[in-house]
Length: 404
Image (tube, rainbow, N blue to C red; front, side, top):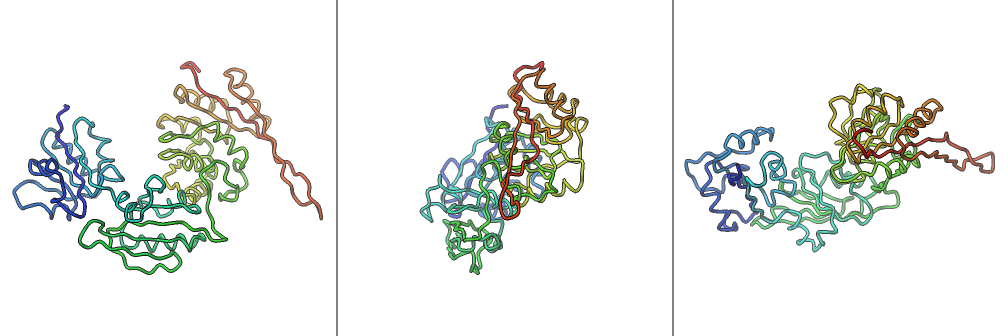
């Protein structure tokens, strides 16, 4: 089926009158119209079937697919492909079967109200998302445009910023942009006290105080950025491993023997839309990994109570695999079989027995083998001396043939 039966139309605060003739025609011809209560209230009365957004949203997808081949119009706010319903529907309906007619997005409207170049702004949604995702985006002089969940979001963001030393950050809440009730509230996070409408977009200019806490998205965060029990992939080895794992947008990592989750967390921070599955059999470490993921802005980390190699069965195919705990010949062999052509594997060993397994795989399959030794300056009485850490043997491998 290639006929366009589904239309997704973005509506602004200026209502139906501001829509193009094509958009109004699609609404007029629809057999089923779906939208929020405020969207449906704009329509003239008639006998056509109407459906308000259900919960959960999966029910909406099923209902729309039941009408496949008939004329369906979905009404959305602003740009349906900017954190909107269009992003969900394109996963279920082929592009050639739909037409999408957007209005201006809230991000575009807010950027113009604030005179901020849109390409220089971080664009975030907190609508139904954890507040701690801010940790991925906040840094000195960052400009953030944030889709609020409700009227309480600006105050919650202000408190979050204050707690992390960004209390001087300038905030602007823009509500009902383009409509008759448009309003603008400005202030600083440390003294934010405005009452804001539920339907608002927030602009934040991040200003760091002397005690501000923030982390870059480059690999190699300080070890103390993570909660851990001492057994973790340390900063230098972690940065080198991530460089060889090569995270990219939409890519999936398996972190086998994840411990406190430092590799998986940094993988997710490194690229937009990256995904990671952490396999960790110890409950205490799974809990640490979950807390680290939230604190560092990537609460979407999937953490499983599994051990390799058996626990690898049924997982979606990864783009890269890190093996930092439980080095065994069976685990490495199963991981390599799971990789696609071009997939990457990095494994670390600190014991002689684990190192011997990596040496054997390197001898058979090639790749890059290095030993990383790090020494840190520490006090020795009134002076300082070098205290070496345990050396790490790293094997990095890229799959280039189906038989490997």
